[in-house]
Image (tube, rainbow, N blue to C red; front, side, top):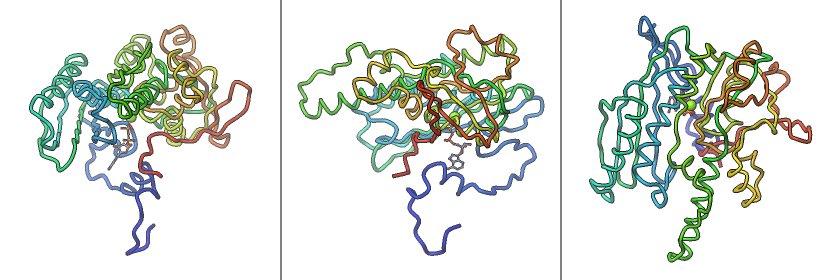
Length: 346
Ligand code: ADP
Ligand code: MG
């Protein structure tokens, strides 16, 4: 693909292009490897069930800014974002390992705070912290967590399982975590300009909580189980609705139509979006870190889900040739493009 001796910048590929490039054609030597790169978790045959394996790396300055991220929250979020990937396969997280590299600007007390956050997440989600690795770093902190979970074989849900006409559902509300990030960045700038300034978070507590202390939707997985629905495809929303819809559609070989007025956005998110003069739907489509679940169900299951609080039906799958579109409130069809956290692209 690339000429020898030519230097290719990471920015030419972007994050997803880079992953595809590096992992293209990887062979699996083990018959127990059921699914490798390309879903929320790798899937491993463990006899009577599937094991699920996922990992996430958080880098200081890229994924978090210590000026406004409490360390306890950081530990909590790092764990929960991994649990979310296990739920996205319809599974249950069981154990995790933690690797951490820190520069000497951190104290023992600072690391205790991170572990307090991870312990809290482990207790809430009933996951055991069973190991890890510790190193120093020249600058800043790197925190990597890997989680193992499992799922009954007949209950596993991949990104690739959708078909035409299925209903697209999303849990909770979208865009609030990104709104919280903008709010924190705005207050940081005000503080830099005038260190006496007191942060003005007004009535935006919800947005801060969504950004700093997100939850994974264990409750939704339980609810779907209770009402006997196995989604056809599923992904968690870490990079924004647009990017995740495209992952589902690409892998399922479908298109989609999503209706702007159906996308769940909290009134507080709308207020902040108005403050920033940005359309709230942009927060939902292109923000990130909501950790909600995006999935499809067959139309036959509509009745079972239609009155469930916290689930919104936002559109349907189409055939691939129809493309991926957002239908705006004034009935324009806008092609959906991923502009999520593709942080390697310029
Ligand atoms: P998620 O947002 O669900 O955590 P990612 O977008 O990080 O998923 O990753 C997409 C897929 O690419 C996953 O299957 C992941 O395991 C895989 N992946 C990501 N980075 C690498 C890498 N450096 N090498 C191999 N596989 C990777
Ligand atoms: Mg995911």
